[in-house]
Each structure stands twice: as structure tokens, then as C-alpha cells.
Image (tube, rainbow, N blue to C red; front, side, top):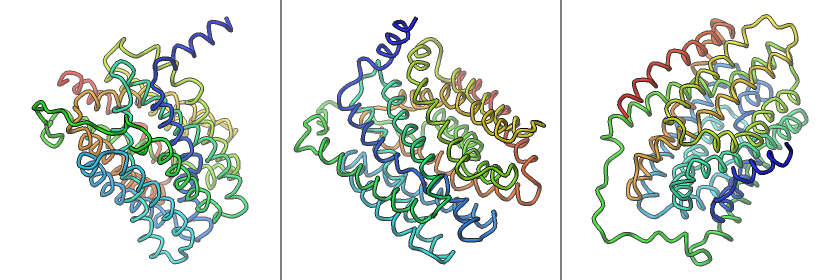
Length: 400
């Protein structure tokens, strides 16, 4: 039985290119410092002394900057290539995280957060294009899953350490996040610089390529709309839910960090083998819908009358993580399947914009609803919205 499990893991990770592994290592280094974003709402409410509404507005500015950055990053990636966009956004984002930690006024934090996010999120479309470039069509979903594994391993480590650091001094979070960004840029340069890695150089084909515009692909725009609504719901787990854990369930920062780290650990252990088992058996939209349904359960579970707060938090995180594992790798598969090498940046940009827009609106809307009507109503609204997305995924499958 043990040998079967080992062979399953070997098969799940087999066949991926060496550059795909290096790119995931760059992402792991970068995300190991992911401490500011998951704790930014708590930093604003606990350390800066502002209300949940104002803290939600800061997160919305982070999302607004991400929208601008994603659109610019996608366009520039199609023009100059994914390597340079990744390199300069990692360096610039690292410096901006450190600067943000030095801002003490609310207005300065708002402005700095916007520009930090704009620079930092321009990295995402370029990174998505790079994964497609270094992978093969037959293992592209697993290549994206490996990258997600790196993200979530980094998230697990960063969240756990971030929770401990936050219990001592919130200011340390900004330094660690900035330094890891800069370290990832150095590693990217050492491995992927065109002078060091010939595969990085994108050779333009001389044949005529029909370049479809993502902005005129109606089916894709419908997909992006669904993703926007889902992402608004999903982001509550890492913005308003931690505040609910602290103020509503009276859990410590350390436990909240461990609970968020549990998300990354589960993904690291099981996502690759689950994707390996599921890939190719059903259309990607089927897996998207199943995952979104599980995410709905995670929010509705927060309203259950469970006496033990730790059990409640653990159960909710378990369901949202399994939903994420089943759905998100195939969301990447879906959008990349509609692209070619000439327009991949703009498709990646729109996909990133959907999530960035959710960062701009989701935390603010969630915080306002929680502040004026209570957390329990918020969880009912978010959970029900996810359920109502299921017919939209069915319609998307028909269009596809």
C-alpha cells in the first residue's frame, strides 16, 4: 500500500520540465514571505486602531491597484516577454512592502497600498504566461498545480510564521514580505535570465498567427464574470473571516495563522495527485462547479451552532480548501485552452483582473455587511451566492 502511494506521487509529479520546477521554486521563495496581505485587515484594526470598514477600504485599494497592474502587466508581457515583467515586479514589490511598513498615517497607507498592489500584481499575468511557455500541453494543468503548490506551501509557511510575528510586532511582517520578494527576483535572474537560459527567449514564429482578442471573446468574458463573483466570495476566507475568528470566536493570532497554514498544507499534500487522477476525465467546468459548491459549504458551516470555536474554524477551512483543490487548477486549464502564444498575456490579464477586482470589492463589501448587519448574515449571503453560481457554470459548459 505504501509503495502504491509512493508510485502515485511519482506519477503525479513526473514529466514536468526542469524549468517548470525552477519557476515553482521562485514562487515558493516569493510566497514564503506572504504575511502582509492575510494580516493586513488585522493590522489595520488591531495595530492602527481603525474600524473594520476603513480596513476593508484599504483592502479594496489593494484590489484596485491589482486591476491596474494586471492589465498593464498582461499588455507589457505580450510586448516585451514574461521574464522582464516578473523580474522588475518582484524587485519593485519587495521594496514597496518595506515602504508600506513605514507608513503611519491612514492616508499614506492607502496611497502606498495602491501602488504596492499595482506593481506586485503585474507579476501574475507574466508568471501565468511563463508557466504555459515552460510546460507541455499534456501536462499544463499539473504545471499550474505545481506552481499553486509552491504558492500554498509558501502561504502555509508565511501564514504560520506571520501569525507568530504578528503577536509580537506587526511591523516585522512588512520586512519579511519585502525581503522574500527581492530574494525571488535574485533567484529568477540567476536561473532564467536570457543570457543564462536559452529556453527563456521566445522565438517569434514567421507564420501568420490569428490573434483573437480576449476582450471580444464573449464566452471567455462570461467565464470571467463568473470568476469575479466567485472570487469575491472566496476572498472573504482570508480577509473578513480572520477578523471574525479574532473578534467573534476569540481565537488567538497564532491559531488563526496555523488555521490559514492548514489550507496550504492540504493543498501541498493532495492537490497534485487529485489533479493527476481527475485530469481529462471530465470537462474542466464540471470540476469548477463541484469545487465552488464545497466552498459554499465552508461559509454556511460558520453559522452552525458548534460550541468549540477551533473545530468550527478548522471545519470551514477544510471545506474551502478541498473546494479550491478541485476547482482552481481547472480554472487555469479553461482559460489557457482559449489562447495562443500571441494573445496569452491579455487572457492572463483578464483572468488576473477578475481576482484583483474581487480583492477591490470583496473585502470592502464583506466588511460593510459584517459591520452593519453582522457576520452571520454575511456567511449566509456568501454561501448562498456560491450555490447560485452552479447554474452559471452549467450554462458556461453549454457555450463552451
